[in-house]
Length: 82
Image 1 (cartoon, rainbow, N blue to C red):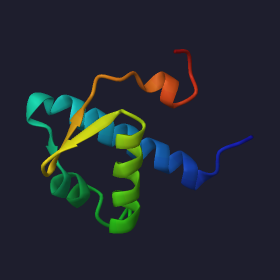
Image 2 (image 1 turned 90 degrees about the horizontal axis):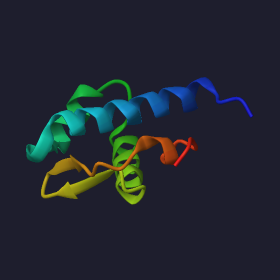
Image 3 (image 1 turned 30 degrees about the vertical axis):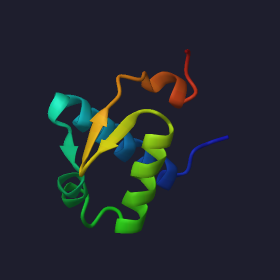
Image 4 (image 1 turned 180 degrees about the vertical axis):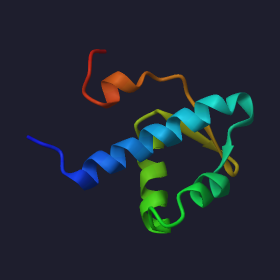
């Protein structure tokens, strides 16, 4: 199965969000700042859905208005080795 251009773009955005949250360390990344960086690329609903999915997958955790990287490896989430 080949990923569509839209699916590939969504994965790239999700990886960038997770990496940004990781780089922010214990302070986390404010959700509004993350969304502001994606204005014109995704809708608010798409962003909200993506953040909820990343949290359900255990990659991010939301505390207050900030998203924090959980330290979970991305490989299993993307279908790679565990």
